[in-house]
Image (tube, rainbow, N blue to C red; front, side, top):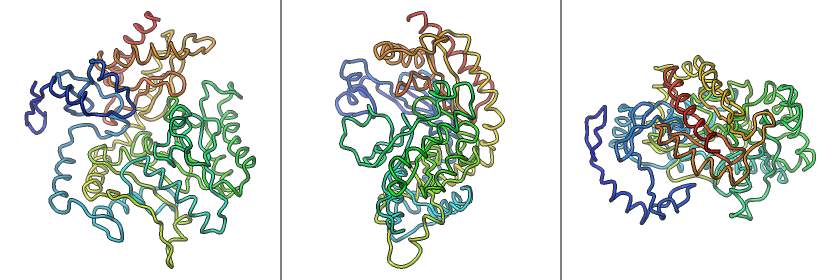
Length: 468
């Protein structure tokens, strides 16, 4: 078939059978069952994006309800980002930041430091979120060694939290099923409860008290392991894995107090939540806390070129300012000239089109629209913040009984993912915690699109319940 791009007018031809065969013969997909291709079902091949829509190689149009992978925040088909990338590539396609610099990385570091809260003024570039977390983990351990406290090497994160797949980041990730096949992983990762109020083990009738209880479990873990062994706490502003757990009021203020009390660094993992997902350039501003480091990636370029960054406080950077101390860590493509140039242009779009303001203004309406789904027997909880929501599915609304593994397999992989896609909505049906549907659409949309999403979800979830 032939696809014509809506802005450039260029046409590209795709041979579906040829692409499927080549994919089956050679492509290894990420986080996916290869048997989908091996069994002859084929794989959806996405060939075009424009605004909040994508098209497959057969010409079918879909609503991109996940911004690719929490990435395409400014929307697909931004010609000016493609043009900036081409211009930068023609001028300087590549040069490393290993003892050298280039203008786009310098300008982007300056811009990110301006956006970041408090004294987070130093930017270490990588090529993605997992690398940004890896950087923060290594830096936290090195920082305490330079303070003469070499036993501070452990890191605390929350149950079911995802922080990346590199060996170090995997130690911070709190999903056992994603780690067991790679054990032994880097030592030093410890888990505390997350902020899933829907399934609160304590204070399930009082949000603020539950938040305080959850934060205090961090203090309990630090004391149990010994403050002289704990280097850092890694937390997402809204936890992604498990289905969008926002922090209760006061949660992060209490966590900040605990970290200060025990000399533990607080890392805000904003790989998903930064750059508009919650209506701010950095999501910690939404919840009024200042971390010691921020990790970010995804939305920085809206996916038009890969980049990641670890933004570091003056306190953490101080030991590296003078003398012979070096941080022996880096990535060939970290702060890539093309990616940095695209990021700067993408951030211009955010400011010109007031995308953060759009999210803050419209998030309550998005929530209200999704909460209409509460009248369905399969919908147990609607939660999230900004343009980032999870819908938890249950077998019994009154008891909150969830699905067993076999039911979840049939529901999510056997029916929901495909049915939603067939109905024209690309999103995520996930069971790394309890079964959820996750939504993180481009930041450009409003009420009309909220209604479209709700309509598709209503139809498919009604059918799913009937099948159960």
